[in-house]
Image 1: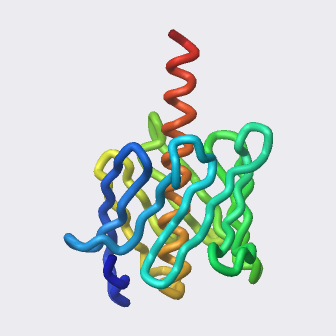
Image 2: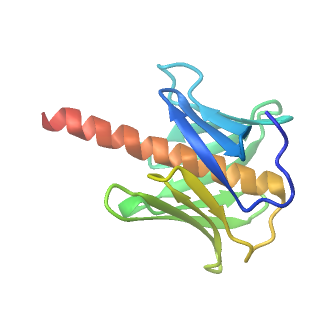
Length: 166
């Protein structure tokens, strides 16, 4: 993996059965994946950083991001109806996740004030970074990885619903 450059207009991502690879140009900058097929947790990794995303709640409606080495909480997430949700970091900074379109093709992360931070286009496998909010690159990267985790969570739920319907 290469480090995230300071000036980035966006990312692309690829998917496999375990998770996602986040790319800037042709270089992998981070990954988010299941450590094993049986795990409900995901491991998000970037150069010199790694986090555990732990699913919680009866219907998987909550999640917690934990710094892997120190085991300290970084943020908590609570979803609401329709794929929306709120991610609150331990420093109080709050972001909202919104999905739009049939089968959730566009995932948007906004600040508590409604300013757009990023848009993830699931079908195009691209991530647009908005310049309206200045965030440290580590926070921006973690928001992107967490959004990819949410995409995988939605894909898993849709697959389970399809199996149950058949």
